[in-house]
Image (cartoon, rainbow, N blue to C red; front, side, top):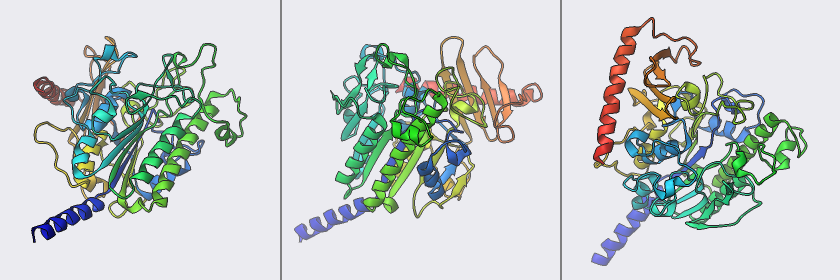
Amino acid sequence: MRRVVTILAVSAALVQAAERPNILLIFLDNVGYGDLGCYGNREVKTPHMDRLAAEGVRCTEFYIGSPSCSPSRGAILTGRHPVRNGLNYQLSSDEGGGREGLPRSEKILPQYLKPLGYTCGAFGKWNIGFSPGLRPTERGFDEFLGHKSGNIHYFKHLYHGQNDLRRGTEPVDLRGQYSTDLFADAAMDFMQRHHAKPWFVYLPFNAVHYVGAHNCEPGEKVEWQVPAKYLALYGCPPDEAGQRKRFRAVLTALDDAIGRVLAKLDELRLRERTIVWCISDNGAFMLKDRGLEVQSNQPLRDGGVTTYEGGVRVPAIVRWPGRFKAGSVCREMLSSLDVLPMAVAAAGGALPADRALDGRDPTATLAGESPSPHKALHWVWDQGRKQQWRAMREGRLKIVRRADNEPWQLYDVRADPGETRDLAAEQPGTVARLNGTFQQWLLSVKRDAKSQ
């Protein structure tokens, strides 16, 4: 009798695990709010992301945790603000001799999902620390193929002159394979091998990040790197000199890879059982030779590494068949911090009692059943002494400044998403109230961070 009860219990657990949704988190690199067709760009070819939006929910007021790569990634994986989780800076090229990265005390998404029966894989850009104890396969991921640092060479996988590609924790030489395809193929292979059990795939592409000269070989031309077949889609030769056209081809190559991953879900008959997120890690950089000439955050102001809307409001699409209405638009204020609470809840898990989360489960909001779960969102980002970006959005109002010794600017971002009319002089009382709220929040988060 005891054996029968045990068998039944195991069977019930297996059935319960099978009913848990797979989770595919696609994280784009520096794709701007105005870069995609489904966000109004008529000059690019992004049919697969456009179709994903038509099949799911397109968010118009979705914000990232930070306007820079490393803290943005730490925020989405922990559900905690960068000030709170201890990674509120961009990793240096040598990661501070191994001292930099998301602290080991932080718990990331696969560590919540593995106890619930999930197999977890990460494929692409890591960039939150790769010293012992900080690497993906030491933080809950069963498999990893990707690069440990920042904006690698798309074909040679170089970062500051060195091969940055790793399988697990070991270097791997796959020179010649286009990184966008490499990461998509690895994710598809993982999904194929683990299709019978619930899985979590974190797919952080390095596309469409520009490639700096320090990641090219001596004498090599610095340009947007892409296979010739994607240039041909725009009527361009392999040696096309126009960087705007080359960028569009890079974006279309990314879109094509995402399309192949989504097609794999259909082939495996997993579409109905898979939550798909597609989010950019920050706005496009509106900096010379780094996006200004070719990308778009329209109709928003400025771009990455600032806390104007163009730096922190990003394209975000989510598809959950049977739960979210296809072709719907969510105009509520949401955050990348919300991905972890939603994923854990969907998997049947419980949120931690030993640490504060800044994210909130947005499921009901995305389903059109409730307003935003956030009263306010906050940003703190330092780019040297002269660039101390601060911002807070509460409802339709937003305060922003680029240094602590500068006055706050005030915008109604619902009526003025381009932040063209500063209302601070007209509404000093509102500015004072919002400043007080921001300072109380910052003090509380810093106090919590010190106690960890």
